[in-house]
Length: 69
Image 1 (cartoon, rainbow, N blue to C red):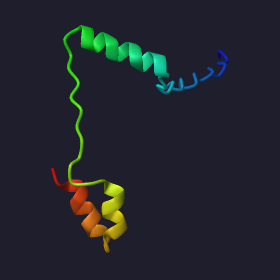
Image 2: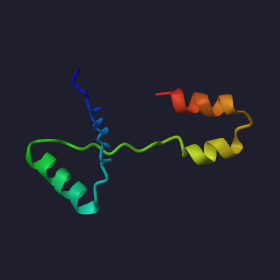
Image 3: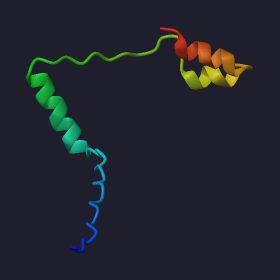
């Protein structure tokens, strides 16, 4: 009978996390806008979340604030 050597298992490759630097983001935005993309700035009129939470008494109020459109 032949002797079999156990095969070495291949380790899983770790995925590399995406961590863009400032220049990468600027270049991406520039390319996006050159190709016809648009960026719309959205600003909240009713106040900030932090100020709302500081005067809220319960978590459900904060949840409602986050869920409204």
